Image (cartoon, rainbow, N blue to C red; front, side, top):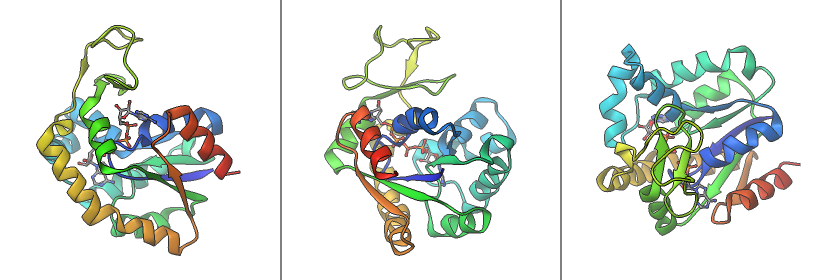
Length: 208
Ligand code: ADP
Ligand code: ADP
């Protein structure tokens, strides 16, 4: 299964991808996670993109496309993949079409108030990328990762000003991909307002 997860920031793409990867036995490839990994390891790429992510702007297409092209060539992606957070622009979508065919594009649909509630309550474990929500998916012990015991943090781009910017960037650059993939007969709309297990089930049923 070669899937793209499309939708606004905070819609739950990463949360569902972390479950769906086991359902389908395919890797979860998140461009946001790949960038954050590079930032943490202070690679050349990480140094270059750090302030872009903090502001909630998009990393330039050529940088992002090259990173994904390389990732999709790895062995584990040959039997399928979930691309989460890529493509985010029409240019990225065109580039992806030249790299691989896709089976479906899952569009996570959520209203703006719910998006802001999800983003502002999101907490993450920096080393594993595991994601929680202070109300909807709290850790067993407040502020602590369930498995590693490390402290949870709020991402810089989940603070108010960056959230506002990311939603504008989504509307301007990424939302046009809904029509792009609908026109190509690939789009599946999923109501992302339900619980994670309900969203997962609806998606698996829709992809049968
Ligand atoms: P969310 O799902 O909450 O929007 P991500 O983890 O997918 O966040 O992305 C975090 C940030 O990484 C984005 O705001 C952007 O700066 C950068 N990024 C991720 N994917 C892309 C992409 N496909 N193109 C450009 N920038 C990207
Ligand atoms: P995305 O990858 O689309 O940016 P995430 O998967 O990181 O979104 O989810 C954003 C926030 O919302 C996280 O705090 C997550 O725990 C929470 N969340 C995800 N899915 C749901 C859901 N179905 N119901 C309630 N909260 C959710």
